[in-house]
Image (cartoon, rainbow, N blue to C red; front, side, top):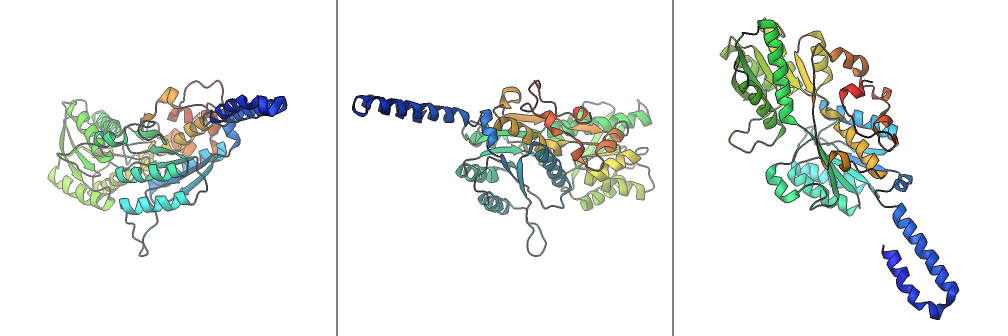
Length: 403
């Protein structure tokens, strides 16, 4: 637009410069307009510019969940020919990981500075971290897309919504954690009633990541706990005895399980906020002489490899997950956005995803295809609207993935 305006203004000098100069300037104006339209961020010609994406991971490489997310995302990037650069958190010199906000923010800044230019930067959300990322990405002329963690109502007052107060923040994808907690509780109670009878009275406990009592319920741990409470409270044949905190640590989950088994000798269901803690609970149950999935029903969240194998073996009743795929799905909608197809038209700018349940009934199909996490066998190009002109709606379901 600026080029056209300037060229239009120069036409007034045509009587001084002559017809040849006027034609030259009109030709220049046409080229300027053509380039401005062609290289708009939402124009397909932008595709000629390699798409560069940075991902900052808030954990070290040995973190099971984030390693899953990166592996899946790398397979998507390879199919779409996207330049994806990943940075994990670095441990301290003594091997410890200080997962502080300050450390993550500083390391993110250093990582962003390694790019000459960056089209898109993907990160999880945390209040102070996101504030710093918005400034850093904006200085590079890029766009920010958040995944994995929702924004609380209090934070919303500052951040607004994507494409609102901060124009460089273009989208946000996060799992419905409350629904995940509800789904897990539903699967565990259903299996328990199936084995113990529909008239059974089920004693249930939860092993949470963290407990936030008396505060605004916003984090993943608290949201999952909320889903557990909602499901059990809606089931008159079940009683939620308590939710204990194990801080996402399997060792603490073992201790908690030992205490719960002694406190509630008639316990039927152990709901866990993560697969790692659920597997720790299963070990304690087996050591006590009881049989998981017969005497007690245990499940977790995350779809870790060990947990899904335990589900297949009948040691773990259920695992809820699939949210590690969000990084890959975010990459696909950004790829289409980069090529002129705005995901907001269908999905909006705030995208809440639904996790899915795997039990012995359906885990076999999943493990047969993806048990080795060989995502190279999937053609991720078929999920892109840009590469499939007849594709009207995104379908990131596990059923579509298995096709």
